[in-house]
Length: 238
Ligand code: ADE
Image 1 (cartoon, rainbow, N blue to C red):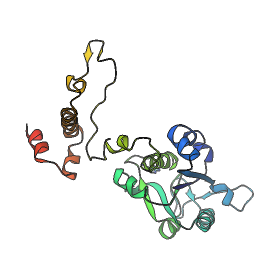
Image 2 (cartoon, helix red, strand yellow):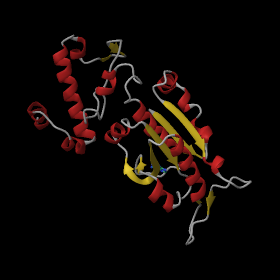
Image 3 (spheres, rainbow, N blue to C red):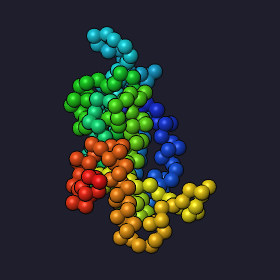
Image 4 (spheres, protein in one colour):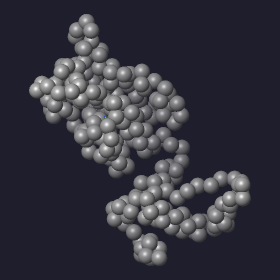
């Protein structure tokens, strides 16, 4: 899958995209990431990308021309590119959207700053608008990294064992059960006995129960969004 990022801060992306599994996926050519500097698409000496809002008000707005040039350039090179603008006004990101996006061939993130981008670009040249949460960041850079990471790890080959993707929070629609590793006793705190038993059916059952329990406690609204077995419901009623 091909990822592209359009930003006025390309340096933001150097280290985060050069470590760990993202680095390995790039080396193995499972994913490709290109970062574009919006200032390279300006036509004036000072590489101005923003201007005051019509009608007055606080802050600055990204001008349409550099964005249009950048989008045209990127889409000409890679016509299959799906364009996402990051903003607090977008649809709220979740695992389902990550799964949707992971099926694309090419995904471009447009990182806004300040008050946002000129509405004519947003309306006519961008396919999707996504928010990563109900809070306001300085810009879309961190948001694009969040989405890139959530999407990249769903692409086959990026995460070693598919199992570790399949079992976690939100794939099942529930919060993930807690994990333990050696030693079996640490400062007097013990690992739950069932996990040491080697009985896989019992372990599965225990993990499902703990997942249900913490989901009920922390995110009860998730329970109405997923199919629950008779056994799950029985446990929740206890
Ligand atoms: N830009 C600023 N805040 C944002 C948010 N919450 N999500 C996505 N992009 C943003």
